[in-house]
Image (cartoon, rainbow, N blue to C red; front, top):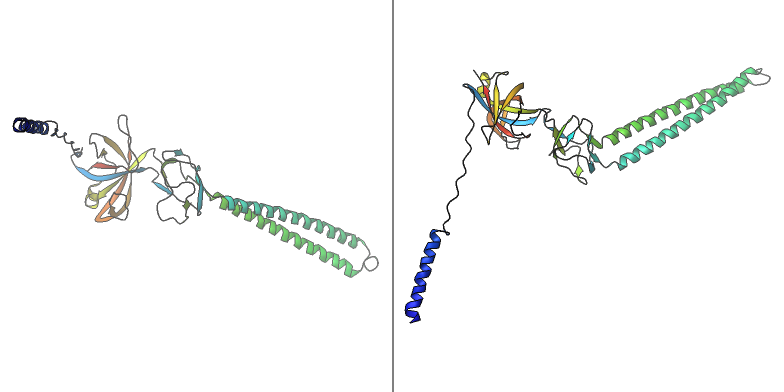
Length: 312
């Protein structure tokens, strides 16, 4: 009885439940597709289009090191604002400080040698004056008088040598001070720290050909480096209206103020961070100042923008 009626009924019920589940909870509604951002449109009737890269008004400065060594202290982090002359990081100074202390001791020793040479000169000059006051041939011989005169000349020469050694020791102190100061890497200009790639305990080389330990630049104001295709160079005029738009939002548009033209048409570089990649096109680079206003989102150095320049 169970096998004949109940089991088939349970099978039919399970099949129906499976169909209902697959048509409802088993097949959820597809999510709404993301709307693609429409490209910005040119705000001028006649336009030169280009790609811009946000950079510091002082250019992006790659801070290197004068000397090689192990970093003992890093005084900054990304986003910090520094003044010109602020120490960014310090390389191990122990050997340089010991060298400076040694050179200072040499200066003290040279000064003592000068004092000794002056005392000897005073002594032999006194003996010469006494001999010259005596009667030559009776109280003092001619040979003795000459020896005392020669002793004065030797003392003067010894004093001159001591003074030369003193000046040399002072120069060595100046060299040691320069060597010590080279271990403290300071900011060449006022600006903001963009990237810190070095940590205490890491080794930096003076002839570093890779990424710089610290990247900084002045971000007040920001500049925009625009690459104009060489085919449009003849249409370009410097002091005309220009605007830059965010690639992710065409409604966010920034007015640009002309700064300068870099008068060298160079091979175009792909804006992907790899400076070795090139294409056949050559471009003219023009620098603008970005006029940021109220209600516009902040821009960051290294950000790409679409640029439109009015042209005739």
